[in-house]
Length: 288
Image (tube, rainbow, N blue to C red; front, side, top):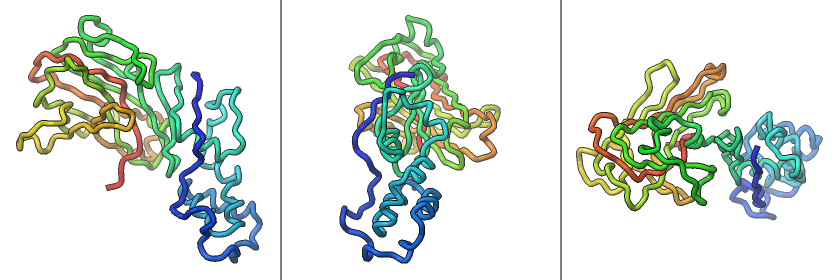
């Protein structure tokens, strides 16, 4: 397990500012024992817990309790925290998991929680996914760059057959959650071969037919024929990402099913180079 970096910001905070409680400082619920209020709040979400803290002083105290925030942490949280780290409360620990991805599985994956919901998020590094010809030096090269989350990323040197596949077990993700999968990449100055090129993306349960869509690694394609293509967007960390597709992680899928995500260009077979692949990121889908 590699070192966990933790930030200092503590919150999915509600829109109400400090001191602006909803209603008065007293509430009919204030007569409830604090542990009872905490138990009730623990059945909500991190966002709702922060809102509940604005109801009254009793709710504010209850919503800060470890009973509430331990419920929002992953069951295995204790094994994910380095022994050298200490956190003053479960709430502080929760937001630490949200603010800085934690490297796991010998640095080949990163894990964090979505701040508002507590849903699990995961990124598979390029080392953890299948890149066809990835071990052939004349086609792909493994490099280290400071802006990458992982020790190594894959740099495309020269291929005509482009195929990337990643798999993740559904049990490591949150149940009853719709997820989106994104290929995270950069382009070098010498990148070519991807202009107006349709890449087939697929996401689905292994052993079943995947849903597919057409993606592109260019952002400035101007062609009516390609209006239905999915184009990349720039991330806050400076990388680009393109949406490979969605899947719903139902409770019936928590017994060992795997999700496969892919990006293929194996038809035109034009030569390509200069793409840097960091990995595939899986996070809760945006609500439309």
